[in-house]
Image 1 (cartoon, one colour):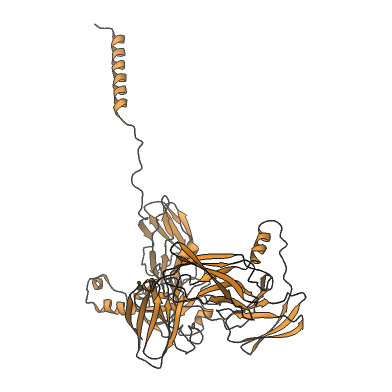
Image 2 (cartoon, rainbow, N blue to C red; image 1 turned 120 degrees about the vertical axis):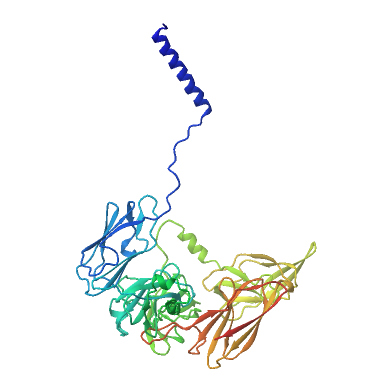
Amino acid sequence: MPNIYSLIMKRIVVFCLLLLSLAGCAKIVLPTGGPKDTTPPVVTKEVPANRSTLFNSKSIKISFNEFVVLNNPNKTVIVSPPFAEAPELEIVNKSVVIHLPDSLRANTTYSIALAETIKDYTEGNPISIYEYTFSTGNNIDSFMLKGSVTDALSLEKVKDVFVFLYKDDIDSLPLTTRPDHLTKTNGSGQFVFNNIKPGKYKIFALDDINNNLVYDLPNEKIAFSNELVESWAMPTPADSNRKDSVQAASAEEHAKIELVLFTERDTNLALLKYINTTENIYQFPYKTDFKEFSARHLAGQELDYFQLIAPTQDTVLWYLKTALTDTALYEFTTDQKHIDSVKITQFKKSQKPGGNRGKKQEDEKKLNVNFDNKGNIFKPLTLRFSYPIKPTGDVPFSIIKQIKNENDTIPQTLSIPDTFVTSLTINYPFEAKTKYTICIRDSVFFGYDGSCNDSINTSFTTKTEKDYGNLLMHYHISDPSCQYVVQLLNKNKNILQENILSQSQSIEYAHLEPGSYQVKVIKDQNNNGRWDTGMYRDKIQPESIFFFPSTINIRGYWDFEEDFELK
């Protein structure tokens, strides 16, 4: 009989060799957790049941198939009709408990919408929308309303704005009273009211800055309908399967409710605190735009200044020709009725130590010069100054024209009028497809702030006629009593040309650089030649804006022709 000890040892050696062999040919891989979870939590139970009637519970418990977290419930929970106090939410194990206020209305259908309020604990996958509905009466209301909110200026759909419904047709309600029903627009600017009573409602949208469900701030954007809107029956599952359903057609028609969001024009023509961040430059901003402005010296130093009105027509700019050494008291009158007394004081340099303030002030004293229309053979080359320049004698400069391998230097002069100017035009017959260099020596232009220019050398190659396209737009107006403002915009939304039309007309937009363009139209209802916003208290909607249906792509040496019916 073999020795038992030696037999055991042989078996151990064989086992170890087997392990070494396996280790040599096997690659050890750590176990993975499987694919990433991308599914939101799933509701497993609701207590009381969703769509309960004769509801009298103090809380609602919603259970899920996994642990969840809350995402900003103060902003993502919408209750319609709104509670007097916001409901409290808490997490209990795999459930969300909604604690309700005591003051629920009798015989009322409530909807609690949780818009991405609930996310799973591990990956943060949200439930996009969860709605819990209950009634304190015998029935759940079964009518609805839906539509969209569009920005009046950009024409883009607006997300995350409140939409209100009021049962009473009283104009002051949005200004003083929380709504009977409310919802919010989704990411596409769409809104829907489910489970409301049949009838007609006053509808109002609000970008509620202070979150109090009342329109009480002048910078809050609003939208409203001049007419009451009528709810319609929510389609049943059977209706949704019938393509020719009367209910489906009715829903589609009502879905066209569109609210246009705007900011009311501030009619308070108040002068704000003046701005003086640069020596000898004063800005006098107003809360709103004006048509006329005048200034009268009252006391102190009388100023010699050059005045500009900002393109927005709400700011007056003064460039002082002589420095202010004392104080000056002036009276400003806007639109011949609003009067302000303004005390103007000396410019104060910043006393803050360190940083780049000294360098910044030094840079501000430089007279910067930029060029417009470089290389354009149909528009004049223009110098634009960062500060109005003083009149001087003729300013010499050179145009260097490159011809093959040689340069032809052409002496030129610029004349500066005996007044403040912020731009000068170089009237020279530049030839097409030719390289030029403009050379202007330093310290030939002087700003009234004591600044002067550095030397200027800029080069460009002129284009040819083949580098431009033309657009002929035929505008057709069916109602001659209506006036339109039509604007040609480039890809940066800058206005290249503006015309006012009251009858059918063709306009040629000549010598356009290749690129994309849009035609914007304002329905100028009050015939003042500009876009006007709405006024809720006066029941005035913002003037309509619309665009040519497609972007116009201009190519060089091509002529384009389009028809645009304005109606």
